[in-house]
Image 1: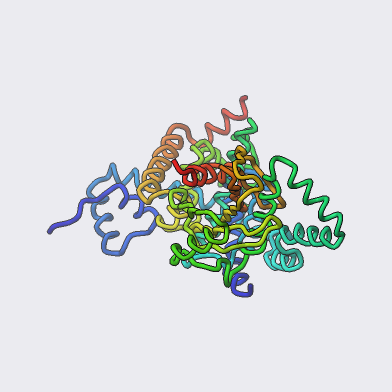
Image 2 (image 1 turned 30 degrees about the horizontal axis):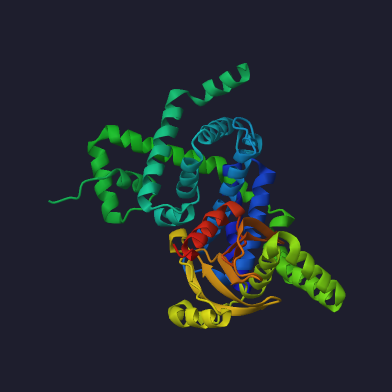
Length: 172
Length: 257
């Protein structure tokens, strides 16, 4: 268990970041990470060789997906526009904050599978092969999802500047 | 010079800094000559920077007590698998003697013995699935011997289900004791190390059939059914909608036709 502590503990902040970016809700995301850590502790010995990082993200991602499906089945849906944005950028400077807020709300509009791949690759620095393992899809699918995610996010970002979005939002 | 053509994948790998230095240089010089592609790539790189910046502060927050790994490890030592508590409860009932028998008949009566079967599978899972040293008696590499042994003990031919289409590999199996005689346990795992247990044994009457029913006990869930007097159950620590198609696959394979 000692070596588990050494290998897993440093990754918890990244797991939290991924969970919160996916769930967009601090409490729900931390619950998910807690669940993930409990599973990691109980399955530590059964883990196959390979990256601990990818293994942990796989557990977390599967829990998140199960949660999403249950939420969909119950007819609830995640709030898209304002859930937790304030929290997400709390440490950033005021000016930067608006830009950050804007990119996160655009990220939230991507389909869940595109969002996941972009976060794993661009934010969490997983290799493409590890991202494929986490998502349980072939490498080619990771690349095509990544490409679609980036094209789509770019379209959104080109369409309206951050200022305009803020102005539009305060109008409604 | 014969240079490999630049692909979309190269452009993304360039943004994600995942290219070998040599390839990276090739992509860089391509981008120098193609400003339109270069501006797309710059857009992607900008997205990456913004996303990282926007989310960075989350990773800097102090971890709440619930996410303290030492606490989680500690509390797990004090509180092992929930299935163990179920076993402890069962033992207490056993000590209660008559109480244990009453319990047994209740389990037996409800839905054709299906819940008794599922309960046995949950106990079997609780004992063998966490076992790191010898979860199975005979390994999958000796599956002919396993089939032979189990068919002898159960006094009827038993087929080992093949769950590779569902992503689970046979680890092996063993004969386990139940209050209704010997049962066959097969254990499977997937690449993530999630383990599944299939338990099968003859039911009390030969021609009995029962439709597939969801079962759960503690954090172990699964399905149980009876085909032609032989009871089957699949259990694991997975959501039931994940287990359902696997159970269907087992039932399909176990049927003679």
